[in-house]
Length: 415
Image 1 (cartoon, rainbow, N blue to C red):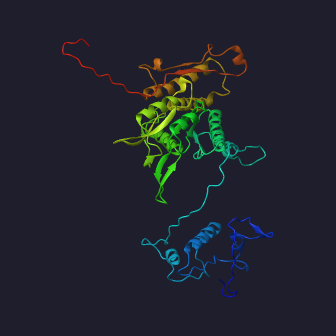
Image 2 (image 1 turned 135 degrees about the horizontal axis):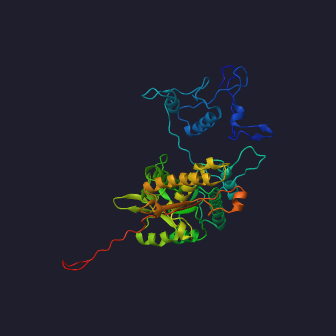
């Protein structure tokens, strides 16, 4: 609406700023673009909402225009609205605390678009491109310790194509974690998977840098107030972080409450758990009186030395800490004095770990050893500028199975 020029009407304007019709721009942002106020083409948001009309269309237009202009007040000068209109009153009338009023808008009929592919997850990192994408953009951030692709396994069982795409994405995430050395990949099972299906899925992977979780988690959608199934990796990454802060990296991230969960896609029992757990499928379980819990901490590795998630993550932590803590040794004279200093630095660090309860052994010499001398380096290593330090630690493994033996004994029986 314009007092001097009257009213103009446009129909079928596109939300895409690049949309054209017959070669001319034809979008919301083209019609209502930001221009100097003195320009005759400058326009406010010209929305006329009359009482009794359908507000859903008006709300959609307002949302689109607010995004384009980032306007603090969507009802600007020149907008005509019936004073009894609900939308106008809500946006104009302050709340009890003096803030601008608000309305709750629910969107429907949308879609998530086409599924992403493994190529898009891998990303690009060409030297000629100023911006990296996908997992390639994470390679420059050293402090990342957990990677996941939530939702990449949605529709895993729908078709061979979706299954192949999900497997390629998971392999991409696993390869990224292994290449970066100090990271672990948290993998989602597929939605609506049976126990047989998730076992088949698990058999396709083998890595010491990844763990698989099943089933999906049920939460209450705060917008629709309906139950919503979400992939487990987001919950698991949060449990990892919480466990690291409240306990330690070396404590298995299991037997932990799944906050926000009101159920699971499939309520597993003990017999089902005993089938899945040995295969490296970590399960969510419900326990009477103890709530929703994560009940498993195994990797998808066939190597028994790297069976547990906390062992893999603890060694990542040790390697990363020792690597950063000994950077001072680079370019120092490679001789006996340097070797002794390196040994002391690492031994002091491991002693603190042993005292905190992270290592197995009643004495430090049983919990770890550090060697950095002529026995770990040859003359060829010295000639080529290599300092080699051999470190061994005895980590604590989780008490995955707690067994109590109870028997009957007479008073005079020999124990």
